[in-house]
Length: 326
Image 1 (cartoon, rainbow, N blue to C red):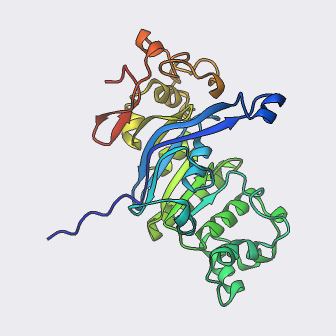
Image 2: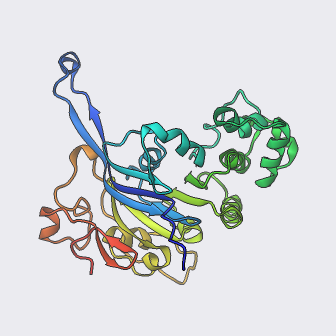
Image 3: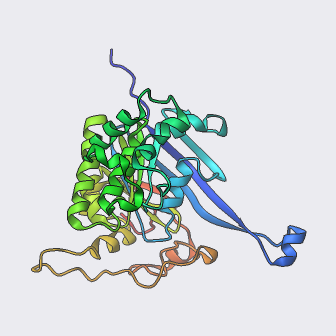
């Protein structure tokens, strides 16, 4: 008799996140004339155990906002978040935060300038417990896991290089042995050689510890190298998802195809396809009607201007939000 399959590690179902914008000075007194800005809408995704999910989109697409909502740092307006088959509520959010960790986009800014590295990487034990019997030895062990020498524990954040700061943030994220780590632009601002070192480090941690990762980036080369599956965000909505290899081989949504076509190719013999994205990403204050990508889409038809598409499955494990995708 086979054991029942375990549920996905983390599940997002129909998530919506709104923000209330105040009106003018009179509205502040009367509490009227307020607008609701929809930041994220109808997002459903799941992260399997031991896999890496890549989240891609232009700046302003909602990637970091979604990550913060998944960690309970932003309140969602509707929808459901679950981890290990258990719905996450304000009452059990402490349990979530101990089992998850986030690597922020700016590693130096995320580290207190008043604390030494050794204290920074062991601070999660002070917050969540239990406190280690030998904090200094624990700090040295965590630093060794990310390839840093023990003397690094005595340094302050301003004394670190970009790659060293990334490794310190990784050590801090691993302190409580989380099952799920969100990495926001883990290679931003690093030299190519250092980027490779950081990505290989994350891959080794995934292999050795079975950690699930959500990697947020606009760098498609990073997604190719690290991710098992990929999700594409546009204006706070998931427009395509599927296995990374299949999405890169045959993108279903025009936005995905444009992103891939605009990726630099190191081979000078191959010319980049001319499918660049036209114009700027629209403002959330003035969402386009119908499909929000229609104003920039090279193949948009009348239905795209008038009717908003729903997310539909086009193959096992692949979904797309587009009227014209086959």
